[in-house]
Image (cartoon, rainbow, N blue to C red):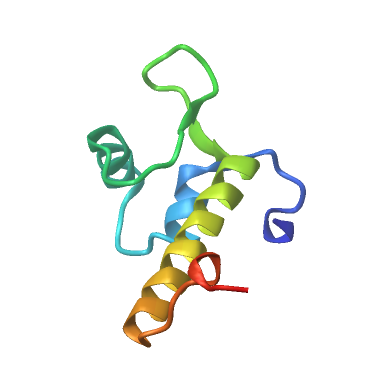
Length: 88
């Protein structure tokens, strides 16, 4: 993800400002804890006040999964069978 200039851990503040604009970092952490957002959050230290972020690979996987879900929903809405279900 080139937009993060080679950072391995993306701070939650950046994730929220770039992709979850309707959420604060605290609200995003709550949604992750509740299972509403399937995104592993990394604590950089064992402290409760430690900076938190998301590994760039985990975030890319999350975006890819959302993309696949959106494509499947679009295919369903268009009345088309997903490629995996088509006869060859």
